[in-house]
Image (cartoon, rainbow, N blue to C red; front, side, top):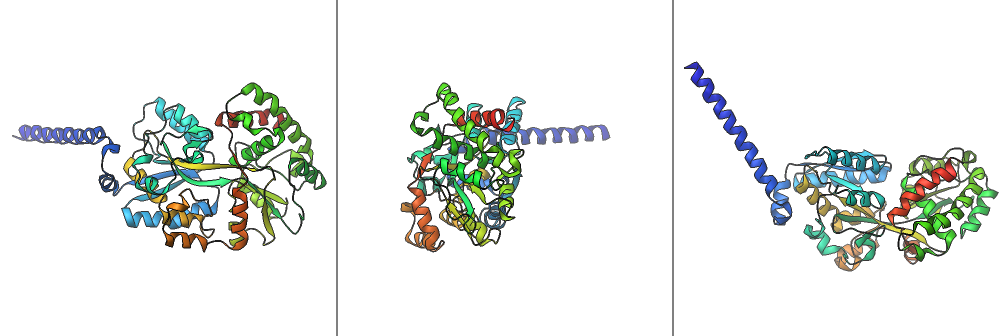
Length: 411
């Protein structure tokens, strides 16, 4: 009898396992994008969503941890977990490895991404699907036909990533010590030589450092439109002008150019401590946020070069093997809501540029926006908008970082 009882127990366990597996397979066989949005929201409840993102800025981290995370938990019963990373390329390499070994359930649910990292992910099938049009807030508030949203560093997003914010490159300076900031790259070189040791930039692959090199390249060649397509022969020839320029200023940089800050946050620290007189950011509101937080002096101001300033959009995407795709979609949709975007725009939280269209907002939301910044900041942003330069294609970004290492860093 005991033997028969054990056989029955084993049989019941086997049936349970098979039933569980069949339910899992049944769920996986359902195309999430074919579900109604209400059903996606329902299935997301109780999920833990890991968002992998650069963790080098306190304001950005606080926006996620202190504002977004509690609200998402309360509204959707989703636990949002921010995973800080130093370089998004590390996560791309992680996904490449997981793709190679056919790992079905990954740890990354949402990835903050743009530019060359998006292209690499797209080319290697590391992204899940074209999910953007499934998000109600994307359809309601985003200008989907805008070229700086549809294309990421010249690459068609195909709805595989969703815009999260907009940025433009600016320089930050101490107006008490720098009375007349440079207006072009020629004046910049003169200023650096006149103020030895008081300027530097982050070393690539830091995003801001790489952007400074691209900004320099664009201004020095003076014919940006020639880079709408990929022409590596032209690039190699033109880039010599940039490397000559950067080698010329190198001895006059902080620590005589023998070392560089490894991140934009380290450069901010050098500026805040008075070791250098300038910093830089791809967030035009970054300096104003730092002033408000007491990290930068009140005499801090912002400038850009007369010929224009690089601009781009940054995005959120879902990897191919995300374990909680429903939760990831709900979180991203929430981060596109007017409430989340306007709060992110506020310097008390992050101060990042809006990606939703102003014209699509309600009158009350427009009033909220107008009350956030003072006259000085508002006028600066209006002026900055007129000096946009589109980013280079991602292929050039890879080459610039590699060539800088060979031609400048190792020189």
